[in-house]
Length: 250
Image (cartoon, rainbow, N blue to C red; front, side):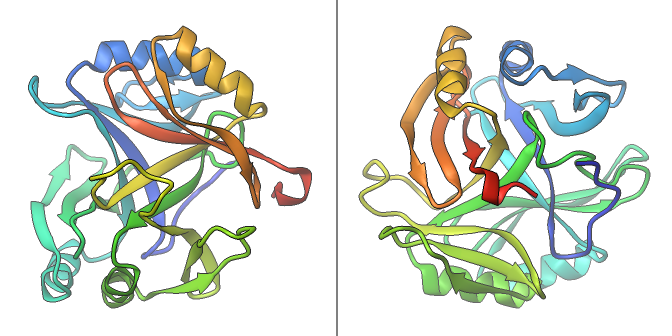
């Protein structure tokens, strides 16, 4: 599905920060069929699907989500007032837009994006494209309060077949998921955002990821929307894949 823009307060982009971008690039090309364009973005059928940039050689690879804003400086002020922290102050990214990086009240990192020439992901809800953003947190109440103050989000309990799960809503739109860090996660996992990509076959995607040098962090299992698995690329960045059931397809 082609995407032409994002309202302020909605997730709009995800970028992989990796100490080994060449290795990561080969992995995602093999898994999702991505290519690279002149802006350095991963593309799917010619449309920007996700970002990739060089991380510190001794740093940890990770996916960073970005949320659309029309006031980066104002967002930074509200983040600090709500108990978060500014990690990278707002700064221009060539002629593409303005980016910033923050930590929420629980320590989960996220970014913001003010569009200029570049709006964010140009494709969604297609195999190989971002289809969901999910936040895992220890303190759901504090996390919900933070995002309500910063972006106006509110949480709604979802039908998750016995496992606690919540949706994050912005106005009348569902913009992501919120899950408690519980028995489903290894001990010591910090609060974090996960980027989820759509696939046509969850089991096959896990097998292909392993063939390409990645690993399966959580095997495919049934979820309310279909089948879900958590993977790690060869540089250690975690992400998820979802195979939707027919009734969940847009």
